[in-house]
Image (cartoon, rainbow, N blue to C red):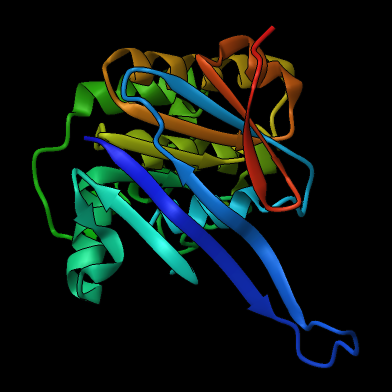
Length: 229
């Protein structure tokens, strides 16, 4: 599946700001089309606009101008219901922060993309192997309150990957992880890209450069291609 960002901008109004302009240009005009089969890494400092851009690509935040296309179909021309179904079917989104459902077990949280659509066909072997690689297989029946920040992060990554989506969008996925688990997660993303899927990782951690096939840098809302070496 081909993802294309065409002329996207995102402005936020800042109420109460007493300056010549109360508009924050979080994303300046951007056109960007990550390649399937490649692990694309977007680096940048906090506040550079990279999370905003990722959320626009994921169908979670409408752009001020421009379009997001999936195989030529405009994401934001869809109805809310169609957009939700599309995201669930095609996009594995891994947000920042802790977003597990407290009333569900770790396994149920990972399988949430199936549960919310009442879908069958879970690949139990894939689930088991992924939980083992992420070192959370023994936590499958635990509740989120019993987990550390790193364990919650790894469960969120498993949830983003569980349906083997064509598009994977990950926001600071290794922020709560030690070096060993950071390597595990980046290898999983690399393997997904090698299966001809589109993988975009937003991060400020330099370790991601070692796994990237394409590298971009976001600075003050502007996205630019960067050299890998």
